Image 1 (cartoon, helix red, strand yellow):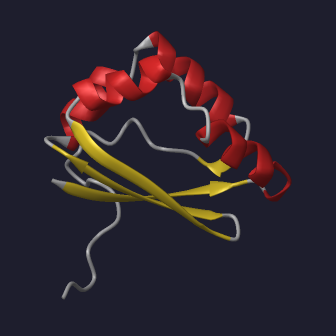
Image 2 (cartoon, rainbow, N blue to C red):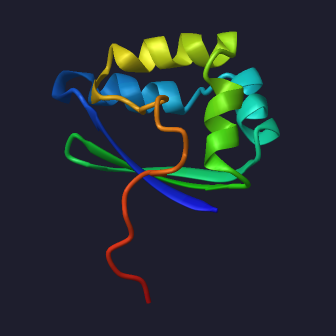
Image 3 (cartoon, helix red, strand yellow):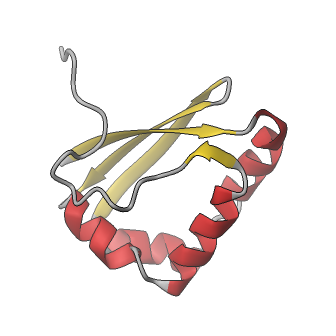
Length: 103
Protein backbone atom coordinates (compact mmCIF):
# COMPACT_ATOMS: atom_id res chain seq x y z
CA UNK A 1 0.00 0.00 0.00
CA UNK A 2 1.25 3.49 -0.84
CA UNK A 3 0.41 6.41 1.48
CA UNK A 4 1.22 10.11 0.98
CA UNK A 5 1.23 12.43 3.98
CA UNK A 6 1.68 16.16 4.46
CA UNK A 7 3.28 17.80 7.47
CA UNK A 8 4.82 21.25 7.91
CA UNK A 9 8.08 22.17 9.63
CA UNK A 10 8.46 25.50 11.41
CA UNK A 11 10.58 27.88 9.36
CA UNK A 12 13.06 28.41 12.20
CA UNK A 13 13.49 24.64 12.75
CA UNK A 14 14.23 23.40 9.19
CA UNK A 15 17.94 22.79 9.78
CA UNK A 16 17.23 20.99 13.07
CA UNK A 17 14.53 18.84 11.43
CA UNK A 18 16.82 17.81 8.60
CA UNK A 19 19.69 17.10 11.03
CA UNK A 20 17.41 14.88 13.14
CA UNK A 21 16.52 12.85 10.04
CA UNK A 22 20.18 12.24 9.27
CA UNK A 23 20.34 10.42 12.61
CA UNK A 24 17.03 8.56 13.06
CA UNK A 25 17.44 6.15 16.00
CA UNK A 26 18.19 2.62 14.79
CA UNK A 27 15.54 1.14 17.10
CA UNK A 28 12.91 3.48 15.61
CA UNK A 29 13.89 2.53 12.05
CA UNK A 30 13.74 -1.15 13.04
CA UNK A 31 10.29 -0.68 14.60
CA UNK A 32 9.01 1.08 11.47
CA UNK A 33 10.26 -1.78 9.30
CA UNK A 34 8.83 -4.38 11.71
CA UNK A 35 5.45 -2.62 11.39
CA UNK A 36 5.50 -3.38 7.65
CA UNK A 37 7.08 -0.29 6.07
CA UNK A 38 9.34 -1.08 3.13
CA UNK A 39 10.04 2.54 2.14
CA UNK A 40 9.50 6.02 3.61
CA UNK A 41 10.71 9.13 1.81
CA UNK A 42 10.25 12.77 2.82
CA UNK A 43 10.52 15.73 0.44
CA UNK A 44 10.57 19.37 1.55
CA UNK A 45 9.33 22.42 -0.34
CA UNK A 46 9.86 25.47 1.86
CA UNK A 47 8.19 24.47 5.12
CA UNK A 48 5.92 21.84 3.56
CA UNK A 49 6.94 18.21 4.00
CA UNK A 50 5.57 15.47 1.78
CA UNK A 51 5.98 11.85 2.89
CA UNK A 52 5.56 8.79 0.69
CA UNK A 53 5.31 5.47 2.51
CA UNK A 54 5.13 1.99 1.10
CA UNK A 55 3.74 -0.38 3.70
CA UNK A 56 1.69 -3.53 4.16
CA UNK A 57 -1.03 -1.75 6.13
CA UNK A 58 -1.14 1.89 7.22
CA UNK A 59 -3.57 1.12 10.04
CA UNK A 60 -1.20 -1.60 11.30
CA UNK A 61 1.70 0.85 11.16
CA UNK A 62 -0.20 3.42 13.23
CA UNK A 63 -1.39 0.83 15.73
CA UNK A 64 2.07 -0.66 16.26
CA UNK A 65 3.88 2.67 16.58
CA UNK A 66 1.30 4.78 18.43
CA UNK A 67 2.37 3.80 21.96
CA UNK A 68 5.87 2.46 21.29
CA UNK A 69 8.22 4.42 23.61
CA UNK A 70 10.88 5.10 20.96
CA UNK A 71 8.22 6.44 18.58
CA UNK A 72 6.45 8.46 21.29
CA UNK A 73 9.79 10.13 22.12
CA UNK A 74 10.47 10.77 18.40
CA UNK A 75 7.01 12.23 17.82
CA UNK A 76 7.45 14.49 20.85
CA UNK A 77 10.79 15.71 19.46
CA UNK A 78 9.29 16.22 15.97
CA UNK A 79 6.24 17.93 17.49
CA UNK A 80 8.51 20.70 18.76
CA UNK A 81 9.67 21.35 15.18
CA UNK A 82 6.41 20.98 13.27
CA UNK A 83 3.39 23.20 12.70
CA UNK A 84 1.47 20.25 11.19
CA UNK A 85 2.15 16.84 12.77
CA UNK A 86 1.58 13.28 11.59
CA UNK A 87 -1.96 12.37 12.68
CA UNK A 88 -1.96 9.11 14.65
CA UNK A 89 -5.73 9.29 15.11
CA UNK A 90 -6.22 8.33 11.44
CA UNK A 91 -7.02 4.64 11.56
CA UNK A 92 -5.82 4.21 8.01
CA UNK A 93 -9.26 4.43 6.45
CA UNK A 94 -8.55 7.92 5.13
CA UNK A 95 -4.90 7.02 4.66
CA UNK A 96 -3.13 10.25 3.91
CA UNK A 97 -3.50 12.54 0.95
CA UNK A 98 -6.04 11.60 -1.72
CA UNK A 99 -4.71 10.63 -5.15
CA UNK A 100 -5.68 13.28 -7.71
CA UNK A 101 -3.95 11.87 -10.79
CA UNK A 102 -1.63 9.03 -11.67
CA UNK A 103 0.26 8.06 -14.83
